[in-house]
Image (cartoon, rainbow, N blue to C red; front, side, top):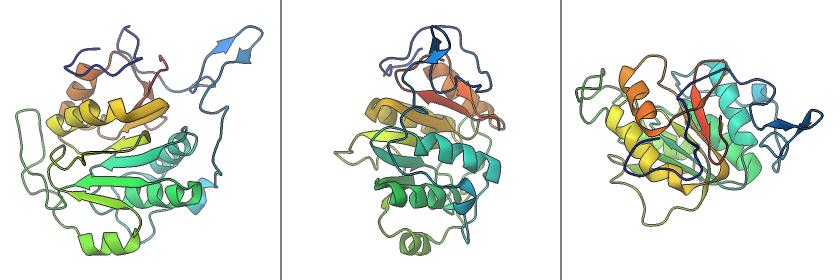
Length: 230
């Protein structure tokens, strides 16, 4: 891994993605016995993923990808959730429902005024995704913590340990900043999931600059488990 803030416990090795199999959340040792893993320790009540849907919220994330997100977040260790890049709140609403059921906090970061800049590694124009009703989001998710502005300028002085981070900010620098500032806050076994790998070259570049290796959901979304090599 390269980068100015190397997340701890990410082992060196070739950068490569592969679909998660039976051992997606751990390793197998001796006579097929599985070692300690996220899937082995469901510390919080889970729910049928069909019960968690965006409802009246708008999301650009597929239902299948949302279900994968719920599984990764729901089986994460003790800690809070965070999302960088909220837009109209579709995936945030799913995380909020799960957080409420599991007694976790949810931290949401976005400008809610559209893309603030467009660099050489970005594809989306300034102002894209500005069609947001922020007061509605706050009404619908009253216990979520909202941080409006350009990340990481909006980072609070203290943010409790995180168990799951969903990065969906559609910009190269914002993805780098999300990794640099939030990955160190993940607890061991915590998960960082990236949404934009399949359609934004800048997202691919940012993730590859910071991680040697990662895993992939069935929908082609890379994720990294802190302290677990892929």
